[in-house]
Image (cartoon, rainbow, N blue to C red; front, side):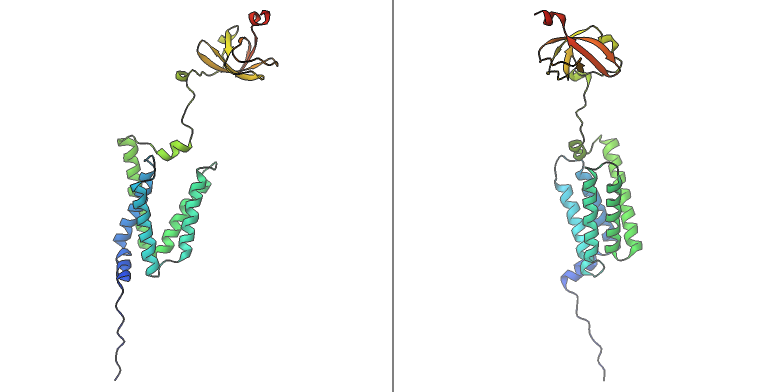
Length: 231
């Protein structure tokens, strides 16, 4: 008499992993991950949002590795995508960032097992994240803190004493004082305005009166003021 083979019951970890790989739970995890990392961009330093995003990703990959859907190749592809996105912050163009996003999406699809369900979950997560970004910018007027630290935001403005020197023919004959030594280029101040200038070729020390003798487009040429030369 043949007896049927009774399958061993799943361990608590396997049951937990099976729960996490449910398509609805996968969608929630991917939404939490994408929202967490995007919201982190609007905060001055790494905090709760980033931690939530990391936990959601760890649970996603952990559950799919336990169930056998994911391999470590998908993790390697994910790490590569993150590296490319970080590199984008320091490289010109948008190629590295675009490739990084593709690598991360490819990694999620590889790890998800079912391409259809995982693809739908990714699209839902991206849609919700885009809506959240629009709300943060349009409704709350928030700006991404991360990029403010990387991109120079301290503009040279007239309020800070700087002016454009394009077509400044009105400066001809004006007397100014050097703020920095002119070797032969440097900075002078005329009536509270800071201007980048060059001399005719000689060195002029700081704190010296100079006269604007020529304006050639953006190039302002000065020489030592006659009163200074007499002294």
